Amino acid sequence: MELLRPVDYRKLREEIERLKREKNAVILAHYYQRPEVQDVADFVGDSLDLARKAKEVDAEIIVFCGVHFMGETAKLLNPEKKVLMPEPKAGCAMADTATAEAVLRLKEKHPDAWVVSYVNTTAEVKAVSDVCCTSANAAGIIEKVPSKEVIFVPDKGLAYFISKKVKDKRIVPFEGFCPDHYLFTGRMLERLKERHPGAPVGVHPETPPEVQDAADFVGSTSQLLRWATDPALGADEVVIITEIGLKYQMERRNPSRRYVFPTPEEGTGYLFCPQMKSITLEKVYETLREEKNELTLPEGLVERARRPIELMLEWS
Ligand code: 13P
Ligand code: SF4
Image 1: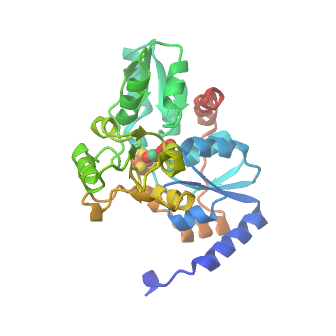
Image 2: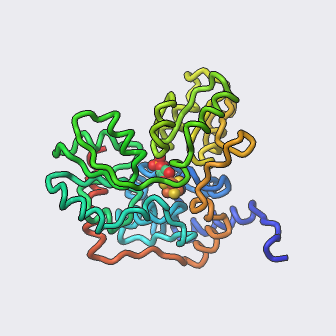
Image 3: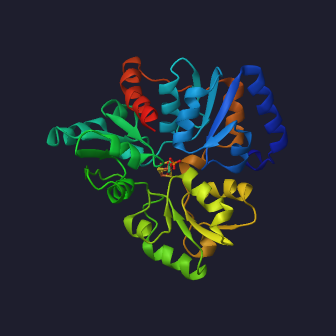
């Protein structure tokens, strides 16, 4: 049966490597990608690293293994390059909660406030923002904003994290959240702590306040990776609350430690982003071979949406 045919990953991988050389292409992948997709990537990182890398790469084609806003960011920074999306329908449920109209309505109520948008937003929302941030640089960016009041779009989890770090700004939050991270509860974390007494806990700032408050460390995916794999942490196991894809890099970087993620075996269910996981090695291969699924953006939008990303890169 077609659906059950075995996949020869080694052969696919060789073909992808050959196509990359032939077409002068690079593959960028987020940490939440499937392990076999991370393995063919020239660069794997968090959304800030990927934005920086997208600006630097010297290739004609970028195959972007991540959700739509990440590919858009790469395209905004490289309008002359071909950005291909192996699964063009892979969106970010959180980014979809914010519209440019909703941001402009908030701006009418708070005319002196700067609009800071999380990079997990559409290009239309970025176009009405003053500066962007990611979970890796959010507090530092907000500190640099010249206004006292800041409209922060769309993640209320990250807004909570920022409000704890930056005391002299008034954050006007938005009601957006990540359905994968924000639905992980304090009770679920207690359960993991009971099962792994003494294990340090690291969480992503997209989790709800009660989870952040009960953690030893809160950080972006790359910050969690550094913290959890650092030999100086001196623990046999760590509990990590973010998407399961990050486990692969942790195990590669420091295999002597055990990384406990939410799973059904732990009694919590997976913390799993279906959109990120909809990108498969087969789709990467077909996209590169046929140079299909090119991401395009209207010209007027590119100029306006690039400005806040460039400012973020300048400030971080
Ligand atoms: P990072 O910026 O930490 O990679 O997070 C992106 C994201 O979508 C988390 O859900
Ligand atoms: Fe978006 Fe959440 Fe998936 Fe991250 S994990 S890409 S915030 S839906």
